[in-house]
Length: 459
Image (cartoon, rainbow, N blue to C red; front, side, top):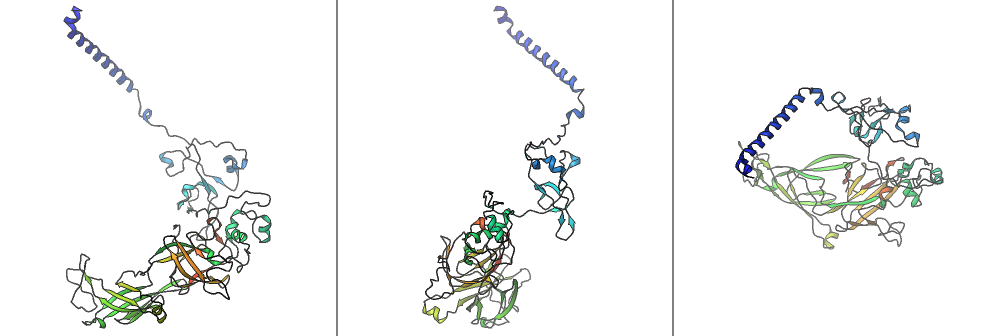
């Protein structure tokens, strides 16, 4: 112990020296080994496609058999390297979905397609890796009822074989249950369930079944205030007001221009409004409206260093009929500003007709008390009137416009109360996905509020 107590500092220094010598020897050993390492040894090897299909009892489902089939050409998977940039890789534990690049005519009528089984990721307006044909985004798969295939229902679409044979449908096509064979807006399976004939256009359920309530909101009116001309007059009653009207006819939209003055009337949606007042407003460069007293030819002031914008307004008030006055109705009032959309003062229900395939459906805006028509000369017409609606519950109450005898106008020809809700009387899995014989139809009496639904838009 005396030796350690006297020389412990030297012992510590000796231990540190030995550790340093050991570390230096280790570093020298590592350095000598790195001299033999080449650049190729540091590269990560390229992985090859390692997918191996599982065995299947059904030979038709085995990829090897599919490749041998003359109808299809299997798209080969490449390795992940620079030379194969852009190809599809299959080094995954689960093989992705595939689709066929069908051989046929494209949109320009030219023959194209190679028949290859291509990964579905290419079906996004991308070229086929086999032939270069642009593979478009496939349509949304419709909801098909998952019925069981039986001896009486070969395709499991819910319609018995005997029913399909009688009505000249395909008993081996599960999708024809949602086809509309007679073009009345009702799918074949829905007509079967309602005991109507799917091949006779005028034999169908009540047309209001096709309606569903999608929204309640203020709507843009088919009229606009375009310009104001003071005619260098101080009297506002001598100012010319340019009013443009949108006219909807046979699927086309045209515009008509008219010049009006204060105290004159204009017609909007079969209602007459009188121009009660006009207010001339010119904005400065900041966009804030400031009323100007200066009168300039053309009605718009343009300063040398300031781009002025006309924000003038006109105020309208509805002229009530004698019957409306007798019922104590208040006149509707509207405000129109140059270049701005004109919105209705009331909120209105928006109906969608599900009697057409998704993407081709139309919407209709209806006012309370307004009469509208569904159908056409081929399937017949039905006239309805919107009597009331509850925005909170999203329910609209319809009445038949034409009844005879002691019939209740609030009930259809089958005795059912006509309440339109968010979901139509036609379930989602029974709506039309393709029309074989013509089209149905829905149009308001003034034919100016039907619009094409935006594709994929869902509520």
